[in-house]
Length: 161
Image (cartoon, rainbow, N blue to C red; front, side):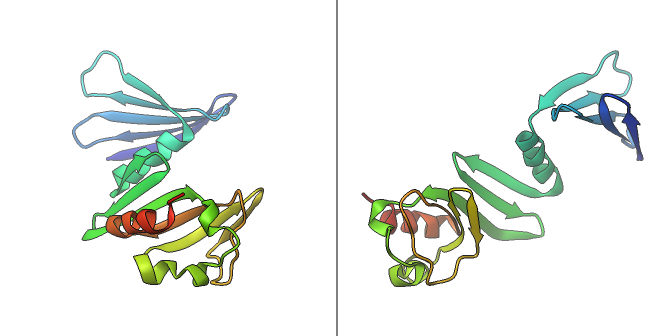
């Protein structure tokens, strides 16, 4: 398998891989932020082209690297190829009124559901791995991680109006 990269003045950067079977895959990171992927099968007259957004390219990269992701709105499930029985779900939620003014510890989220809050977004500020005494405010968004069943329990227990 061959690998080449080159800078294309005024355009961006090109990465090209030739497979052992003679197929070629080229990825162009354009200066305008777009990503183009070309697939040229051996003996084909023209390549197939796909234009990807940055998030689509990251998702494709995760799939190709074995960290399979299934997006569902603001949720991602990750399955690790080396740990076939481990599936982790990550979901973003808006903090409901029932949780505002309370702390993570006071709500006993992990004890009741097994899920863990790993980040809070408050306006322009992000808090990664918030402390147990973190107090929720109106408008906060949170990122919760756990197994799929743990997130379902979290939703039943805490995401009610």
